[in-house]
Figure 1 (cartoon, rainbow, N blue to C red):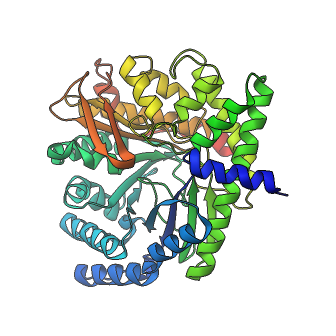
Figure 2 (cartoon, one colour; figure 1 turned 45 degrees about the vertical axis):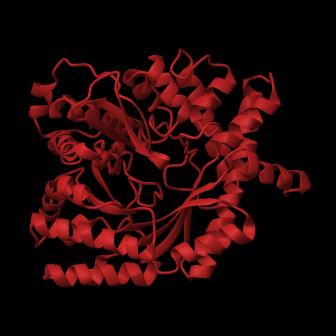
Length: 452
């Protein structure tokens, strides 16, 4: 039961500690939009999105005003578009991307996710067309986000897809090189992608979801750091307890927003994703939470252990606050979107190898990392393979969102603005994995996949 003190603490979190609801995301099924004519398909997609999401932004703003809770983003996620493209060509896929962008603009949302394909066991015709279209689609649209799932704990890793996505990431960077390679900031490669993730760039509306649903993603790194600062020199168990209590309060706020948005829009409430999502703003950093625990700087020895504690405590606190926790739910470590991570990368304390170790114990993976523009496609593919292997073996979601900085190298920086932030280009090992990547085939699923 919340008391007056809890309510006042939550108000302080909102006013002084950057607490917000990061996103209210409406998931929309496009399966009933199918047509054998590309023009008719696009018309149906546009009409359904605009019909379902026409009040999404207005309702979000009403809730903000009435409850005093900042809702930073209103977003849409749709059925993986590859499921609609089996009879179409690559240019038809680009046309669909343009349609999604137009619908997002009409509805006034920040991003629309779902230009996606699920290829962990192989490619359908629609998957092939969509993946081929990704570089152009992300170059000619502003709000469309794309994701590709290349592996799972049940299926293993599709190494043909991994190799292909290494090339696609590089091509996407080249197509948007005049805009600091922004296309790659809207493209993520997954292992074990969740169907109900409200966060971009990886949001899509999975085939197991209802026709329309509201999913909410909360945030609150600043609130967690402030709570730890107030707690002083407690022991590690005390640190975990402080984080759990704070995560509970943050998640209850998200649950309230989800219930209200669901009621007002007449759409079922889905999940609350209780991930700690940082921003480049000072005081809103996951890295600074780890440093508040006692690390001199994020990336030093002890970082992985501290992050494991944080991630687990966030989940334990959040799951008590909502009956339907889902999405990714944990702590995000996107380099360019986190002020503390940016500082650690600039100083050299944080490297890609350390980030990879950290991803074994937290949500998602190697996220928003700028790498040298001359990084070969097979090296990008190998980065994807390494991260996907962590997800596959540990039965968790992992992902890669790297940005090859075309024309730039280590020591220079990219800047995207807004929540995407910016930061230094980090060094990548140059020894070639080309022969391994070129073998193709599938890495078999680990034995734990045979539990059933």
